[in-house]
Image: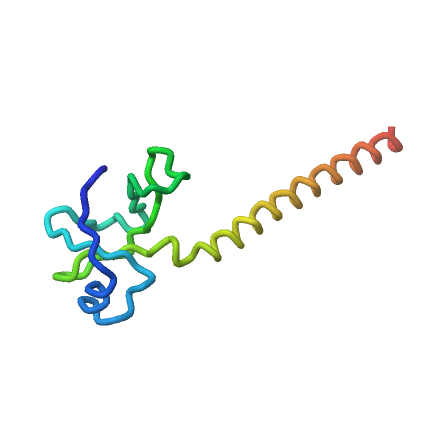
Amino acid sequence: MLANLAIMPTYWCSKKHRKDMRRFICTSDKVTDVGKGDSGGPLVCAKTGDPKERGKGIVVGIVSGNKYNAGSFFTRVSAFSKYIKENKANTILMSSCTNLFIIIYYVFYLFCLCFIV
């Protein structure tokens, strides 16, 4: 589903929620909003100027919640980019280790099979 949301400046977001909201993106639209079951969904912005966008948009937030009279708030993906990059590398490393283990196991299995027969 597509919707146009008005992004609220971080300063006003922090004031409305009465806490530091620098790790969040807040919207102030009262007509279009997130609803029950939307948590974890993406907030995608288009025409950002980012070369990685390629006309498709970029995920900039993840639906976190909604507070009555304060609007919706999304976890700001860029606030966790270091964590994402570090763990993406770990996932690739774990995948490579698993693949290597499978290859070694298969070679060992074939080697043992040759001696049993």
